Structures are given as C-alpha cells and as structure tokens.
Length: 117
Length: 114
Image (tube, rainbow over all chains, first blue to last red; front, side, top):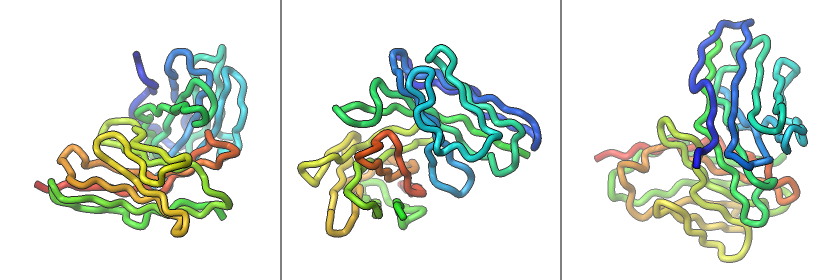
C-alpha cells in the first residue's frame, strides 16, 4: 500500500513567485493534515481537512497560504507570493479517523522542501 | 504557555553505546506523548506513543521511552545504538481534547560514530 506522497520533493523559487505543493494521502484516509518546519523552528501544525472540508486552519500563517482538497482526495497547498521566510519543509499527513484516539495512527509523508531565494 | 523542549540539539554517540534523548513538556494536563524519527530522505516515522497506563513504553527499532509525570518528561532511550539510528528525533505532544494537533520539539540530531 502506498504511503502519503508529496510533490515536489524539492523546489527552489524566487521571492514573489507562486508554488503549489501537492499531497496524496493514503487511499481511504478522510483526514489530511499539513505541517511545516521553517528554518530554525519547530514543526508546526497548519491545518486539518476531513474529506474536502477544512476543520481547523488555525495554524495557517497568513493569507498568502491557500490549502484545498477538492473532492476529498489529494490536497494542494499554494503559497502566493512566496517570501524568504517561507523556506522550509512542508509535511503532509493522513489518517483514517481524526487524531490518535481508538488506536488510530497518523502517517506522515516525506515532506516537500521549499527554498525561496 | 504550552511547550515542548528538547534540550539537546545534537548528540554524538558511538555505535553500540546507549542513547538517551530528553524531552520535557509544559501543558495544563498530561497530553498524549510521542517520539518521531526522520532519517535522511525519509518522512516522519512514529517510534512510540504514550496515552495512559504503564509509564515505560516500548516502540519500534528497539526504542523505549519513560513517562515521568512529576518531571513532565518523556525521555527516549535505546540500550545499544546502530549506525542506522543516525537521524533527527522529535518529541511531540497532543492535547487530549484536540489530539490531531501535534506540537513538536525542536528536534535532536543524532550522529553515530563507528
């Protein structure tokens, strides 16, 4: 069974450009999460989807970030326009049910490394 | 304020030696506790978790962690380190009320020397 897949694995863009990161969760996982680790900081929660619905987007840093999950399958995270401080690694994760209760596991992808120059 | 602290940024250990990684948390109530590992080129992998019960938790790859409520700590240990254990290790917590929302420590990078 395929794990959580993220594209691209690495990208380098100039300040002011737009980047779109994609996440394909494990098949059948209704819950999808985005986290990020910017340089020198901890990994931080960004938002949580249940199917196509945003349940919690309290971690989104500002309105330059837009996450979507059309059809409740894959998700995209767009950064427009990108700033230098957006450089870091963006992790996607998915799970069957929300959180860790009932023995549920949240599976993480390998991350998308973003460098803004 | 809620926080997760990993005091050691970088640890170097000899292959075959024991390893202990420290984690302290500050939360209103005991949260769920986790250790994740990220090996080079890999995603975050769950090593072990603590929800309740026995305070000594066994995980994958020979790791264990001990929850100490009095010290608000959840330290990770391995008796004998292998070269493949070189990686970055993250302690994480999640509040029981919103247990999908992990808060991570800054991470500890482990280097294993031959």
